[in-house]
Length: 493
Ligand code: FRU
Image (cartoon, rainbow, N blue to C red; front, side, top):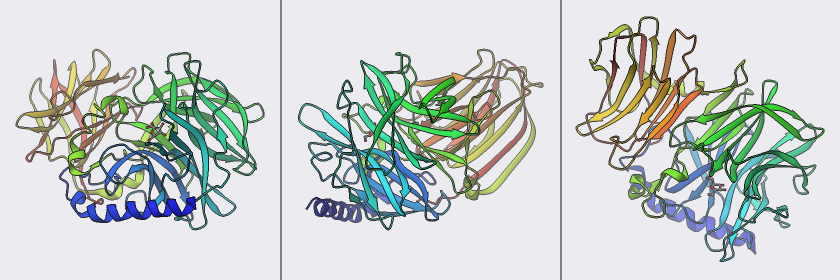
């Protein structure tokens, strides 16, 4: 009966997608190479996996409208992480535990088991007094059509954890045992809780992997735990913490005790629009991360769902990034090499001298990749400023403040909607070169700097024609050793 209801709901949603697809596709804010849903709303990446020779993205999805509502799981596959084919929706709310008053199938992850593709997700129902959340299983023989496990839910909120603060299971396998980490709150502090299972269905609590003492908020959404090199990484998106978006902790882990000792912490992204990243293993073993290019705090939600909502859609994913462990225990997040297939019309310039205050034109338009190396030995300027997406009354400014050792991403004049300045460190100690790498798309700018450790993702809703991009030095001169710029292919149409 309930499987029937899920199939009916998926069919209805597919019909809705069919009727809206063409209109949404022609929205003037649609991205060119960032992954989006076909219609409606998307948020967190879910169930990222390389399965039977293809990459799978699942995603939190309201296919009906460009705002958050009852959650479905959308689904798409790709051979190369760049060109995507949409598949039928994978999950729809249909049971008492994931289907009442705007609950739904909340975030989760995927794993292969017994030749099947298993999804583990948070069933959320609203009993009228708030959410009740528990972890649930669905599986598929063909990787396309899913069935929910009859004995769901498989993990309920333990004593002391409020039922609306227990979600987002991320699963992996070590030797012959499955593990999952899931976000929770206990006594007002955030936790990452570790469970284990031999069969994906019966789960046993192991340990609290890590816990906030207040500095990282009261709840961790979308925790993830993985190995890079000889270290382990716990990452999560804190609610109520000082950090805005996504934090990582690096340390050592012992499978025998389930204990994690971390020594290093950092921000995955300092921008306004990077949240709930999920990691997965690429076909060649790289550890890749994909994030949702938005965050709850920075949208005046429930009143205005932003400029793309008016085009019948909202939400996309940031470019996939590879997590690489540095010698000092920090992580770098490097855009994946697969993105290079998008490049065309290379422009290359060398040894550009920037005189104090003179705006040097880099390129026009908004869809490009840009790489700059600034020679710090020949630079006396206090600030190097990128003025991007400049049209008659709009501009986005990224300030590399060499004196204050700070990067500022200023959206106050970027478009008619976004506001605020995102700030992060600029660490140039003992360095001869400031490295800057930018992916700009129709409505977003992703900046990578400081050897990919200080990154900023911010959405820019300026689609005016005739946009220009400049670089300027202030308080002295600067020398750019190399400037490389490419146009990028539109693969999302
Ligand atoms: C994170 C999040 C998750 C939840 C999902 C609901 O963005 O709030 O914690 O599972 O989104 O759509």
